[in-house]
Amino acid sequence: MKNSNAETFGFYLNKYLTIYLPGQRGLSTNSILSYRDTFSLLIIFMKSEKQIMPERLPMSFLTKDILMEFAEWLETTRGCSLSSRNQRFVVLRSFCRWLSIENPEFLKLSEDVYAVKLKKTPKPSMSYLSADAMGCLLSQPDSATSDGLRDLTLLAFTYDTGARVSEITDLKFKDIRFEAPPIVKITGKGNKTRIVPLLPQTVKYLTEYMKRSSINLMDAQEQHVFRNRSGGKLSRYGIKYILDKYVKSGKESNPLLFTEKISPHTLRHSKAMHMLQAGNNIVYIRDILGHSDLNTTERYARADTAMKRDALSKVEIPMPEPADPMPRSTLDFAEHKVEDDMANWLKNFSKK
Image 1 (cartoon, one colour):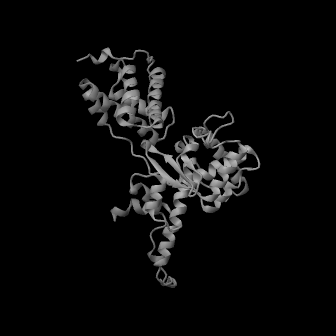
Image 2 (cartoon, helix red, strand yellow):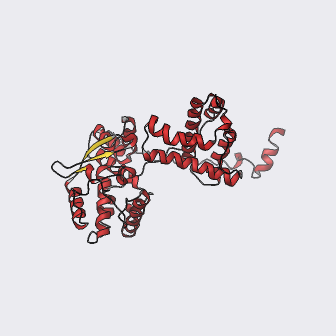
Image 3 (tube, helix red, strand yellow):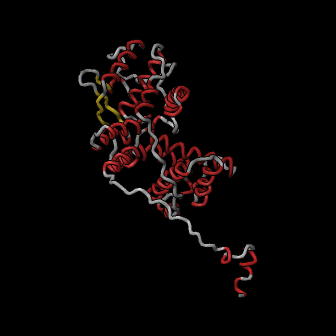
């Protein structure tokens, strides 16, 4: 058996990210990048807080205490939320579990790290846009311009399909069928694919967008649908920037419609809620969103206050009005009142 200290942290990390996660776990590129970000932060922590350089970092540095310090650093110094803190710690915990399989000398480390309980986090409330707010948002882009038409197409497509941001950024023209019935093949988490129908108006936006951008569908099969001004793939940050811009202009025209914090994922929530409010079967909603578990989809049914209120009103029964208050007594209690000096009364209470 090899001495664990003879192989560096970089050796194991490279094997974990390039062989185990894509080969044995079959994780998508986006998931692997998320794992990578956690280790990048760990290296920053070691350099800034422990003055330890990552070059040929021995495995002896990796302890439960160091990982707990790192988690606290994420929360206090980096300002990460509790959910982000927990998510980063889970990544490291999984890495330690893999280490124990690769080399039994790390079994004690894995057991120690797995014994650490995650911090409890409050369940976030689900935010979504009303139908009026969604309509207002889609009216903000100036579709007479090339950028405005791209932005309108992007927002409409994201809402129409209920796709995640990563699914939008990875979308290529080969994934869309424009012939009737128009559909899109979306590749989601774990490289699972699902087929989602496209509504006529969204197809119209896409067709006009391609026409103005001089995109030949036959030649653009491997080209990403939504691109930046440089012609490259539009990033998740680019999508957030576009959404924020039109949310801001929407708030200026109608602030009451945009009271919640809105992210690209809000459009996905909004689509699900609007389908539910329209009376669609929750199984259809699950299939369109690409949830592997129906329980995940059922949270939309639990989140809609308006639907709850409507359900309660349907079983409302007549209830009596509150009775008038009783008339005040005319008896004089002046002689029976507690002494005016309450402090003295309490002080002398036990002496009587």
